[in-house]
Image 1 (cartoon, rainbow, N blue to C red):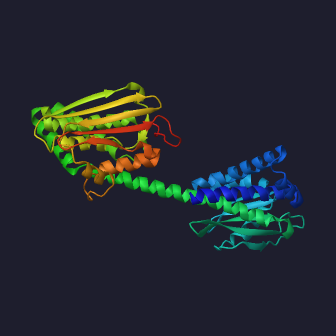
Image 2 (cartoon, rainbow, N blue to C red):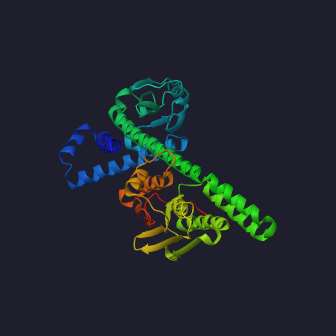
Length: 395
């Protein structure tokens, strides 16, 4: 929240300084005094929009491509003949006139937390670039780059506007760091889920396949292909999201391997509404729920286990229910599992899925679990059919 507020304040400051550069300081003061008027509102809105467009590419980090796109929009906003963006070691982009000064800039890129003046030497009497300022770009409290703004003479360089621009760019670099941290955290969550795919399940699946090699080679071949597809999907690397159709296909493969081991002890019912199959949801979001159902239904009970999976259309949302007739659990133990306090090897799948759903969709979309000792377990997942930024990779 602090980063977002800072970004908003810097953006507003950049807009006012940009207006000062374009209209003159006296006109800028009049603009602020009459900002409530239609002309002032339009000018301020235009400057705010231009500043946001200039900084937006840096949400992807400071790279030659993002720097080029940012500089292309920022230089007209500041009204200077040349502008450059650099990382800690090299000039990423020079936008505007007199690029022959690029080497002189490269020699002055030592990281600094303060704004510095830069005098440029040139044999060309008509060169429009003689003087500039180097403003640090920061992220997480450290200088990670430089905004260099140039003009023909010292008074012509809008120093304060350049500093406000650098603050706005730095805010987006901070957000880029947050995005990377969130992505790293998500990757760690998925790795934890993959590690939770029970080694016993893998061993038992391969043992079941081996038992068919002599008696039913065709069945052994089918199961081996199911096992290969299941593991390929579970350990894939392309994207944080998948479709409900792909997730259910992986679950069917998981259940087919379980049937090979448990035979008639496992009874599975699927009721899937076709219209929800394209819905996007977090990767490996449902498989841990089915694994939980089998664990508490088959591995902890002797009678026949029933697992029911229902996917329904509910207007703007899709609703998925995984239910079993297993041993269930005490509500206190369930709360400990969902809060991650039940032990390092207990319920990691459920707490992981619950946490990721809340991170992606908000707290209203966590797992809803109904259970009791000897009463089985019913887990409900609701996901919006559409959410900005939630998109499955192309198949």
